[in-house]
View 1 (cartoon, one colour):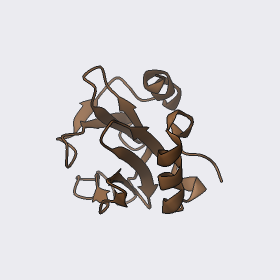
View 2 (cartoon, rainbow, N blue to C red):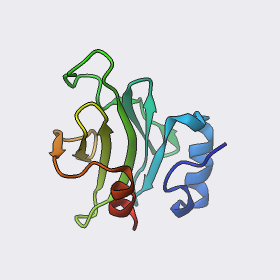
View 3 (cartoon, rainbow, N blue to C red):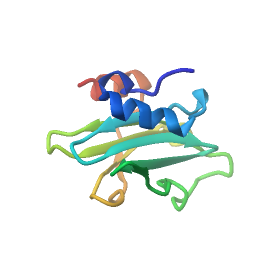
View 4 (spheres, rainbow, N blue to C red):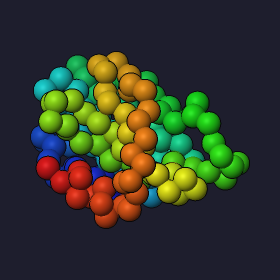
Length: 133
């Protein structure tokens, strides 16, 4: 199985927790760990979903993109990337191929904040550079 993006930076206990999810290798999963929480984001069909792990249990999935408007019926969100920002909080980035745009959200403790549009950020390689920690 392909390891999620960021897996190599996780503690051993976080790696075991991620293993419990049984993520599909094609889900383009990404993970990040804070002192209080392990976050995983992945593709689920045409949507981006995230899950948190704390106190030995997985939280219910959060459908990050399910309520967002789509330009076309076949628009999908892809390539989620989680990073720890300079503010010490997790940020989630993902792409829309139809809009050729990267979108991002800031973690607010229990859920993701409002969506921001990264109008000039698109290419997947650029996201890899932004996400390098």
